[in-house]
Image (cartoon, rainbow, N blue to C red; front, side, top):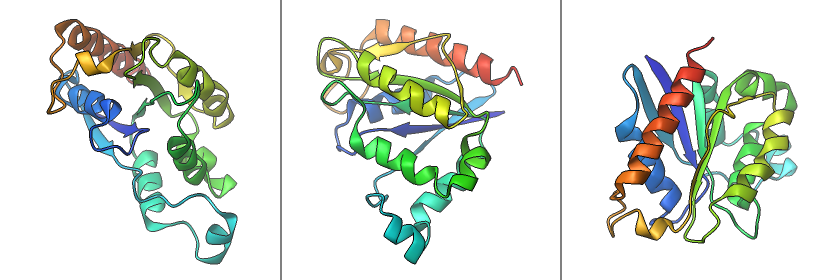
Length: 184
C-alpha cells in the first residue's frame, strides 16, 4: 500500500485546493491511499520560537508523518502570480532545523497540482515551487500536470467535484504519480 500525504496551500473553509485533495482521496489508484494533512496550526515561522521553545507540535507531527510516507501531493493556490505565503511558511517550518531536511524531504516523491477561480490555472505558483522542491532534495514528479482554472465551475456548493472531465484528468494524474512513487 502506497501512503501519500496531501497538503492544501489554502486555509479557507471553502478552498478549491482542499476540495481537489478530497476528490483525489476518493480517486486514488488501487493499493494507495491519500491522507490529507492540515497546516492550519502552524505559526508564522520565527527563529525565536524555534530556538526558544522548539519546533511546534503541529509541525513536528507532520514532519514525522512525512518521513514515514511514500509521497506528497501539494495542492497549491496561486496568489499574486506566485505561491501562497501560508504554504511557503509551512514548508519553511517543515525544513527546520536544517539537519532535518534530508530526513523529511530527501528523495521524497512530490507532485504539484492546483485550483483557482481565475482563468490561467496555477502555472506560476507551480513554477515558483520548483526551486524550493529542488533545494529540499525532493524527487519532483514532472510526468503530469494538473492545473484547474475556473475551479468554481468544477465543484458544487458543498465542495464536491462535479466536472467529469476534471475527474478524469485528476484520476490520470493520480495514477501517474502513484506509478512514479512505486518506482523505488
